[in-house]
Structures are given as C-alpha cells and as structure tokens.
Length: 165
Image (cartoon, rainbow, N blue to C red; front, side, top):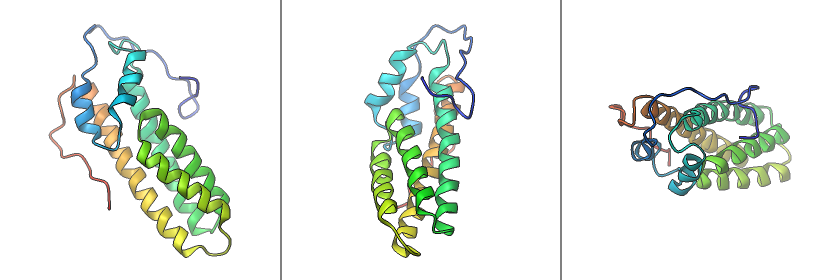
C-alpha cells in the first residue's frame, strides 16, 4: 500500500498461523457493497495474512469513512461545496481500492455535482446526507470485517448494518 493510513504507514503484523485468510466470513461480514474480486486482489497481496494487510486496510478504511462523512456533513452545513467535493473524492479513492464500487460511483456523482454547485444547495445537501449515512454503514461493515478476521473468520453474532435506502 503506497499511502499512509491516518498519518502512519501500515506496519507488518507478526502472525504464527500460516493458514489462508478466512475470506468467506469476511465477505459475509462486509456485505454486498464490497466486491468479492477486489477483496481477492487484496488478499493475494498477503494470502496468509502474515503482514496483517487486510485487517489494517479495513481499520484504515473505517477511519477514512468516519473522517469523510464528517467532512461531507460539515461542508454541506457551511455550503462549502469545495470541501464536499474534496471529501467525496477522498472517500471515492479509498472505496475503489477496497471494492466498494457502487459507493465510489455515488461519490463521483456528488463530487461532480458539488463542483457545479453555487448557493445554498438544498438538493445537494440531501445527496450529502445520504452519502454520509452510506459511508457510516460501510465504516460499520469494515469494522465488523476487522472483527471477523481478528476472531479467525467466524462471523460476528451481531447482525451487520444495512445500507439506508
């Protein structure tokens, strides 16, 4: 991974278990917003989890979603459409890497709309609110996926969050 996560580079994690990552439990925890092929590509970079790439990536993604959801909301409250566009762009980039392509497409649409926005932007604020809510759902799913990996692939007893419609 070429970018730092929250100001730090991702560090290898020592693990004694050489078995492959439990991708099935992870896929179930993450839900349909995350593309299986993208997760498999990430897994291929660290197939046995020796460097802890997938858990670190999920933890980082959860943090990014929290930050960008907050930034989206703040930008919309201040009618700062440049901030909204930057937050949507950042959320889109992270989401493409981890396979949340549908969310990334929604981010692109908001990014484009925000760049053309002037004035109070009531319709744009509704789009921001929906995207921020979706970002928080993805954050919760990423944290659930992190827990699944930490627990050796067993799916969590808690029901995963659902995306708002």
